[in-house]
Amino acid sequence: MSRILVVDDEPQILRALEMSLRGAGYDVDTASTGAQALTAAAVQPPDAVILDLVLPDTRGTDVCRELRTWSTVPVIVLSVVGDESEKVAALDAGADDYVTKPFGVDELLARLRAALRRVEGESEPVREVGELRVDIAGREVTLGGCPVQLTPHEFTLLSLLVRNEGKLLTHKAILEEVWGHAYADESHYLHVYVSQLRRKLEPDPARPRYILTEPGVGYRIVNPARRTS
Amino acid sequence: MNVRSGRSYGELATGLLASAGAVVFVTAAITELKPYVPVLSLGVLYVFAVLLIAVLWGIGLASLVSVASMLAFNWFFLPPTHTFQLRDGANWLALAVYLVTAIVVSALAARSRRRAELAELREREAAALAEEVLEAEALRRSDAIKTAVLHAVSHDLRSPLTAIVAAASGLANSELRLADADRAELVTTIRSEADRLDRIVGNLLDLSRLESGVAAPHPALWPVEELVGRAVEELGVEGERVVADLDADAPPVRVDAVQIERVLVNLLDNALKFSPPGSPVQVRVDEQDGRLLLHVVDQGPGVAAGERDAVFEAFRRGGGAAAGGAGLGLAIARGFSEVNGARVWVEDDPWGGHFVLALPAAERTPVST
Image (tube, rainbow over all chains, first blue to last red; front, side):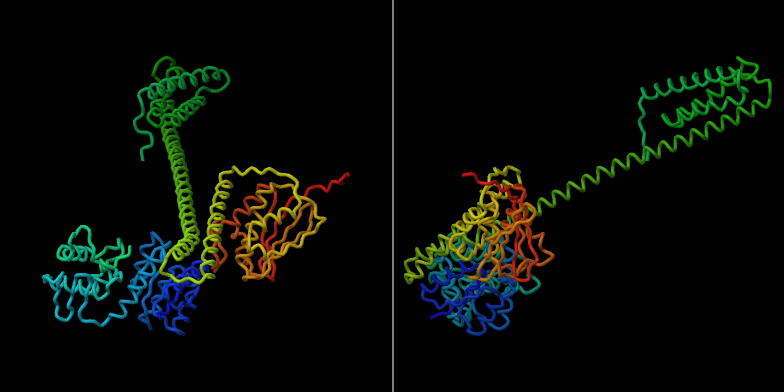
């Protein structure tokens, strides 16, 4: 049974999430400050953390950065509409995903399951996302059994996305990984390569089903069959 | 800087007319004074004409007046009169000295006039600039306030909303296996968070009424017990922590009951929010100088000395406060107090938070039965 640590300073939100997650079969720990959260995570390491970005003692982003110095546990941050820069900061600090308040429990559970799944399948050399199959070691990509020709940069980008299936990757994180630190701010590179990838992979590149855009934040690849929202 | 460029034709004509008038006037004056004073020493009177024209129209016309007045003096007063001839050679020197004096005076006068104009212009510019700065500052402040309002409101509205959506979607999700007690608690959460949302919306409305000045009170005589009782009732379950120790003999107060109830609800709500869960919040009264002092005392950390006035500003919250609330309650408490002739402040109290509401007490009228 997976253990989830929920961090929010609003007692009512904390209680509602605790009961819903427990109802979904998870063990739940709660914390209402950043300091409590770090202590709880150290005492009994959780399998995933749900972290509010606004805490009374510190920013959720800082908690996330601190946590990342000794833990790779998936972190889903709770954010609010219009706070794009804070979302990006949290993701760059190591958060895996975010949901925007107010959110339904279904959406949160879907994100949580995706995050936990990612951890399980971390070391597989061949990744499948829907009809897409990426052999990372063999550098081969097939879509519905047909081989797809990709340039080296396209392949690096795609393998980064599939290795993080469901996870939201920020522009900066992708650029640094695929093109290197010097290109961290050149998001137009990324937009061009993503649209090339979509033309090769998506049935309808204008309405992507695999590579999804999170406006102002980044991209994620999802299994179209598993999409919940 | 050319202050008076483009002088109009009409202005020039007026100037010429005034110049001629000034010369004629001084000539007439000298004619009148001639029997009493040696005429040569009266020539200096023309300087007044020059000065006047220099100040009003500048050096150009003033020079003209200097020459014209010199000629007029020569023509009318210096022998042989009614000619431009001079009998006495020393008079030539006197006229020359006069001319130089007149022109220097007009130059100085014209310069001081330009300075005055410049100064006036600068003053006008400075005033305009100051006004602009003030307007910009007011605009910046109102923008800052709007941003703060939007921020506080969006956070404070969203928190209960998030709890409601989370609880409702949890209840609706058929995959979740919820214990009956959990199910009941989720329903309670939805109810109480909806009430909280309603209180915040009510506070926002109250605040906008106060700010737009439409909160005219309708004062009447009320026993303070009843006001406190109604406020406590409105606080629901949390209100059970309020311990009211009221003097049955306390005089009634003359206030708008609805508005003072808002004050009390907000003071009590604040005390409940910032004190340990389950700890009592005490309410007691005493009388002082025709006022009824209502004390609300909690066991929380209290308000830091430097913040005792600031807590009553809208969208302010005590330092490090984790509890929810837009920081509207105390601003509303102060607003409604003031329109009712009451006052509210923070008392220095080592034991915890201590707010005082001073209400105007009514005269104790003997009850006739």
